Length: 123
Image (spheres, rainbow, N blue to C red):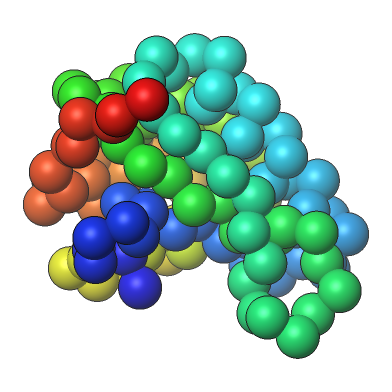
């Protein structure tokens, strides 16, 4: 669960798709966020330790003031995939987004991020 020291601020998983498609969706969103949001750390992680996936869940570490930019990046990604279902987990709970409009996606993501404090990443 996000929130412990060293843990990601967000975990995003892709629901209602097979493992191969979840891996592909995770890779696409990772690329989009890394190319659009400065200071964000995005890693592919296994959803379950005993599965054969190479990373169907995204672990996101927010840099300083990256929350709004991450929300916009996820919104843009969801707008291209209105049939996608994603679960966004934070230290205060989770939000499941299914077939939402671009505007609703941004509201949901911003709500999920509203209780996440960005960290300053050290290099």
